[in-house]
Length: 481
Ligand code: 4AD
Ligand code: MG
Image (cartoon, rainbow, N blue to C red; front, side, top):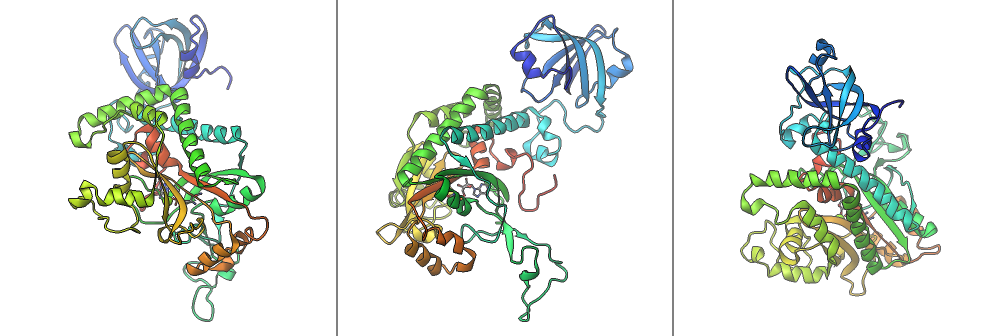
């Protein structure tokens, strides 16, 4: 774009005396008879840029349209700032209104809005400091994820979004169809005839790219996917989305320990990257969280600030314990004995709820925990069976404030064992023949995991609701924007 300079560039390498054009959205305007100060933000950085206007030089009718939310272009000389708060500012010689914003209608005012209110105006919330910061950090994390795997020699594999199989053997899925829902073709027995559907079969939006990812790993050795995934469960919580992004590395010749090592290294790499490249935004989010928690009851406040938490996770090894050890800890824990858990833990085999995961992480170990070797009944069919006949080589990584952030496992690479498990669980073999067949032709030990990208973003930004770390959240009853 000819002649336009981004605010980030001006502020990071100020060239006093140069003449530039800045385009962006007005955050505030303060004016008196002699001078007007306009704070402009163009999204390139959390910082606003101050444009100083001598009212005699700019048409009064144009200045009237410089209101919060309007988009403007200002041209002028960069000068050292007289005031506090910024090193440089612009002495405006030309000002153009690109898009007006009627102050009687524009919903974002220079004050604190609640996150709930901002969700209702998701089309405008990227213009707030908070969401600008969150979305810039989100970008940095996406970039760092590709960088990490690229540096390790992994290949990014695109797995299909429309699938004919249910990777997790259970999950509730969104159907994909072009059939006329009012009048679908029927078979003789009255059931819907999907052979007449677009793909000649039943299809859904994928819940995971893992199964196809495994096919890639059994050829390219190390791959990762980074794609959208869809789950139609009716979960209205601060950690569930119906549409979310998942990173799924899959590695040939990795056992479960290699898998855990990679996951831990990966998450620490991402934190380091964020601290190094997103300092301004993280400082802002850190302050924001402290401010928000000031008004909360003592017991609801975080023990540490956002930046302390990031630093802490970076410095210490994650705790690694088996499911069996975790059950012992939970069974003997105070909230279990005092019946404070919603789901009480009484026996081995119980599925862990987020309250249990958070107890282990936040109260017991006070650091991230990797739980491994889960009962096979509560995990997916593809996980490698241990010799005890009871457990599988699963691992979940649990994080403070969130609970499960990563789920993964060593995969069952033995043909007979895998096929037996598929049959035991009554999974239709014809939908998975290609997956099982890889265990017949050059099978290899391999492992992988899935990181829920938005859960990760919750951790890195300190935002408390997963709806506030994705630009346009999809949750039950909510797909407006
Ligand atoms: O534990 P999940 O279901 O594991 C899988 O899908 C495996 N195929 C991964 C693999 O081994 N390749 O999901 C992985 C992660 C969870 O740990 C969680 O962080 C996130 O995805 N996740 C969700 N995030 C937001 N909303 C939801 N409804 C989520 N469900 C899972
Ligand atoms: Mg899981």
